[in-house]
Length: 278
Image 1: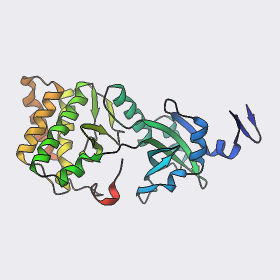
Image 2: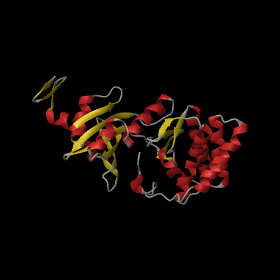
Image 3: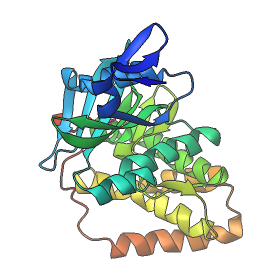
Image 4: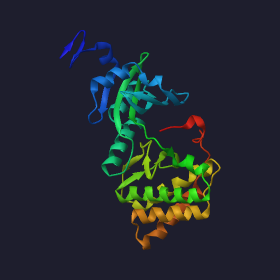
C-alpha cells in the first residue's frame, strides 16, 4: 500500500523521498529492504573510509552500515541506456553480484552480497553494491612483501585456488593476485564480475587463470622466479585434476599467453596505499 506520506512498513511509514531515491535490485538473504533503503538514501557509505575514487566517479568505500563493516562499490549511471544495462544485469557490479553467488554456490569463498541498488545522489543515479568486508590482505600485497619461503607458499596457494575453481566448474577471467584475498588459510575472490561457469575449453580456461597470476606481480616489479612458477603451475594442475597426458597442452598455452602479453605494468598500482580495494 502506498500513501502520500510514504510507503507503509512495519512500525510506521517510509518517507516518500526514500522510496523515490533508492531502488533495491538484489537483496541478500535475511536483509531488511526498509533498513537498506534508509541507509542508502543518505549515501551513508561516504561517512566511511574512501579507498578509491577515479575521475569518472567510480569509488570504493569501507564503511560501517547497519552495524557491520562492509565494502561499498559505486558506479555512476548517467544515461537511460546505463540504467537499462543495470536492469538486465549487464553492468560490472551486476555481474559481480552474480559471480559472488556462483562462487559461493560452488563451495568457493567470495564476500556475501548484502544489497545491490540504484541510488539517486544529488539528483544523479548510481549503482551501489554492498558486500561483506573481506578482511585479510591481497595475495599481491603479501607477495610483494614476502621472502622466498613466503612466496613459495603463496605460489602454491594461488595455484591451488585457481585449480579448485576449474574443478568445481568455474572460470574467472580476472583472477589476478590483487583480487585474491588471503585470510589465515582461506583464499577468497573479490571483484568477481569476470566469473562464470566453465565452457567447453577447460584446459584453455585453466591456462588463462594460471597466466593471470603472473602478469600483475611482474608489472609491479615482483616477477615470479622459475621455481615459484613451477610450484604455482603444479598446484593448479593438481587441484584441477588435469590428467597427466593433457598437462603439456595447458603448459603450452600458458607459455603462449605469457609471450604474447603486452606491458604488464598496471595503470593504477594495486599495492599503493590508496589501492586497498576489497
